[in-house]
Length: 467
Ligand SMILES: Cc1ncc(COP(=O)(O)O)c(C=O)c1O
Image 1 (cartoon, helix red, strand yellow):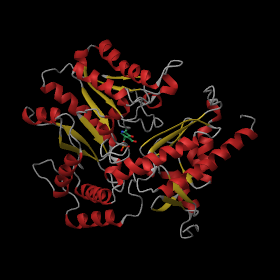
Image 2 (cartoon, protein in one colour):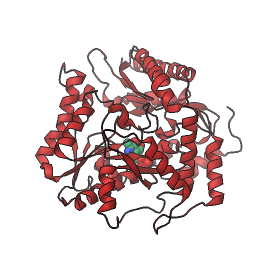
Image 3 (cartoon, rainbow, N blue to C red):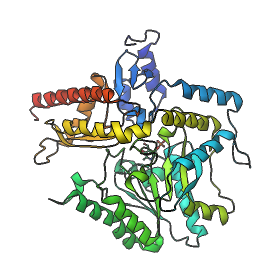
Image 4 (cartoon, helix red, strand yellow):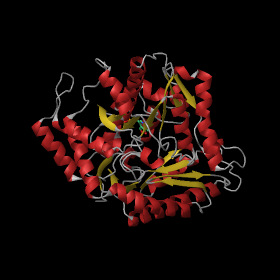
């Protein structure tokens, strides 16, 4: 398994890659000068590059591959469905069996909170598209409610909601806004609930959580409550660096959205399907969204599928007062994607993965991270279910960061690649979202690899006189 793949001319593939493939979120010129890493196969929790290097994939691809690689059940489901009905649209009063079965299954899995139910699903093929659908649906809802002036959707700084015009606008990534005149009109942002960066000196997590939620109320009042349509947020910010909010944050957000009657969108593209130990993350934090965005792990990334769980508050209005909703995608309810999702959920249920994260591997990962927090480089270590973030600091006692031009995160990520581990660097936060099939022994292996790469990063910093 670890031998280079001699059938491949790696240099030729890298040259063609540079010549023809514009990668997402990439400096094209820089990548062309380095040459891409060619990933050729995967099994379980590991991937291999064309040189035969085996790497433990602690990012599940891109927060996707919850059931691990190489699951024949998912390939079989795709093949069977392709041979039966590979595609049909659902525009013209037609439907297909896997799309119906999956919508029914998701409605059963999404917990009701305080009598609020999720009985309906709107399908797309990705998280970004799903958030575009949210914008369309939210505005349509308020039009139908006779309040068309309620247009503004509030997101958060450093939130990530995708890369389409609407998704990138809802998100709060300044680098994305700087390209393409974003955000689009009627999107506003508040600060993120990141205690390390935004708390006052000596402010407790709990106090900070309430204060950070209060920024939503301040923004609503600044804009005028009757202009605000919805608030969108990730339960735990993923791409922003695994920012876990204080436990006081979500209850206060709920109080505020209730007070002003605005819709709450929970973007669970990363957090749903067991990642935090629940089928849906709003259950973990106990809030009551009106719309829930999903994608990625619904198929374990084996095939693109996304969508929005539409709660009864919105669904009732769209259905009963609606007329035609002029929005949808060629691949909404794609039969093959839905069949693969059903097979994926079957596997997750059969193997008890959600339960495992909640009661076993999630708490175990938290223990492991508490030990990693002792490492001299690690200033903060946080987990929530099977996501985790390590903040690398120059001085953990004072909280002094490394100078940004040192790019310590990328330095550490290079050591990861060189030592058979895939972690992601977000600034100086090293983050993970490992496959949910992991057992405790896999987490031990992960922990040993993380310790190794932290040691190597530390040695490099010391050699450079930076630590
Ligand atoms: C919370 C969240 N929303 C939306 C998206 C966008 O999803 P996609 O890349 O499938 O469009 C992502 C992707 O990482 C995400 O993390």
